[in-house]
Image (cartoon, rainbow, N blue to C red; front, top):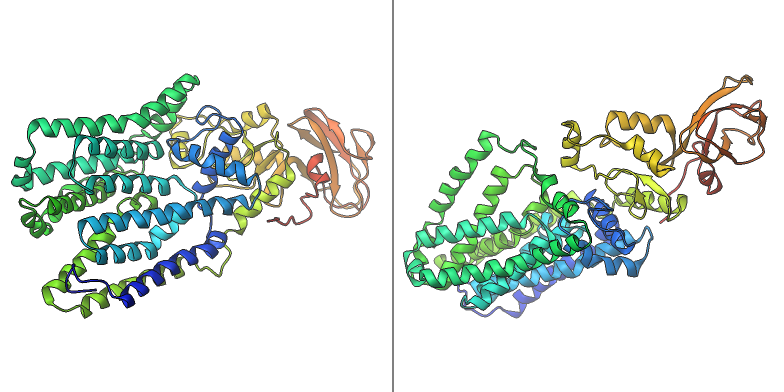
Amino acid sequence: MSSSAETAISVRERTIALGLLAFAVVLRIPYVFHYRFNPDEPQHLHVVWGWTRGLLQYRDTFDNHTPLFHLAMAPFLALFGEHARTLFAMRFVMLPLYLLSLALTFTIARRLYSDRVALWAAVLLAVHFEFFFVSLEFRTDVLWTVAWLAALVVLVDGRLTPGRALAFGLLLGAAAGVSQKTGLLVASLVTAAGLTLVLVPQTRRRLSAARTAALAGAAAAGFLVVPALLAASFAAAGAFDAFVYGTVQHGLLPGLGEAGHAWRVALFPAGLAMVLWLSGPMIRSASGDRLRSTRLLLALTAAVYYLAVQSFWPLVTAQDWMPVSPLLAIFAVAALAAWAARRGDVRRPATVLAVLLAVEVAVLLLKGPVWEDRAAPAVALVSQTLRLTDPGDWIIDAKGETVFRRRALPWVLENITQERVRRGLIRDTLAADAVATGCWAAVVEDERFTERARAFLAGNYVPVGQLRVAGTILDPPDGDRRPLPFSVLIPGAYAIVVERGAAGGLLDGTPYAGPRLLAAGNHEVVPAVGSGRLAVVWAQAVARGFSPFVPVRGVR
């Protein structure tokens, strides 16, 4: 780092920085294939799949996110097709968005500070373990971050006019079309703008009431465009109520998580007071300087957002920090540059930055060992689902983790839904849904299901690999040929499989010679001598090589 923001970047420094950026980009490739799949990824992919199948989000496939990301991703999924390896392909679609986030961060930092700050802020962001991994995943937050950063580029890249305010609002509206959390970003930005006007009188005096109203009106008008178009589209399709419930009402649950705890609420004013005290030098330097006022605005926006999430957000997750991580990287590098300028010593700040980068890379590698394949279980589940079921078959899963099949259970069992079920606001209808859809397959034990649902699955489905199929396992005493009763929930073709030898004996009083249509209700089987345990299971599963007595391997 240089002691002056204006000093040109040397070829050596630029080469090192670009090398680190290249390292971060190349490292993402093995991580695409080995990093564990977050439960949100197949949930988003299932919603995208629904669009490719003509299913309407919220009405036909439940979701609790705004739809712009899923609509944008549908053409890519249609191109790649329904394969287990498509999970990897859709992660690769996130790579251009990751690169765009770095480029937008560079642009903002360059406008606020210098080429040097911009370059190293992009490098720091690129290897920051949390940003690296969240942006690797197939999730709405990656596009959300890009839209937010693009809006900030418009905001800082010149004098604020009504036209620029309109463009800024349009991009913020696009961010809202991707994630409802944009509302918290907007609230943070408005709060930061109010604080800036109060703390910097010169900035307040430059903005007349009429000009402030014109800028605010243009930004608000732009912001409403995308949400209004989305709402109108769902209304035209007769799904407006479902759209409103999925995007707004479902998440409004008082007392969720740690929301409302006194210690968390108290954190906001205490933290804000600390931020304002620490921002004293930045506040004093902003007097009469538009660029420095803009720096203060963005710094306060990041601080207010951070405090608001920590104080009021009910369920805090790693992805919540995506939009402010670029700003934190910018201000961290800018602080080191200012330190170097004050001391006239570039070595110590450069050493601090080098140590920081080394720590980030080390944490990245330790948190997600690239040499371990932690993606295999999710891929095997999708592979086995495609091998076991046909496109028209229904399946029971928790959040859409089987991806390419219709879900018999309409609700996505994420934290909010689980809490609504616990409070009795949503009924547990898994058993009825399974019967109503004629659902032959389900995932294995999952703690997100209620005890009642788990008991139903255990009693009516048998495990085969990473899935369950309709049927029952019978365990007759050795040599005992007494009738063994069992019941059928889903009417259709069933087959008998045995632990040893060939299936035989009697099914409902007649010799068993192959799969047979069974009506819902009670039946009985008389086992052949020496067959050991036997199971009566969905015939299609047996025909495709699935058995509760033989391990099933996932195919990539």
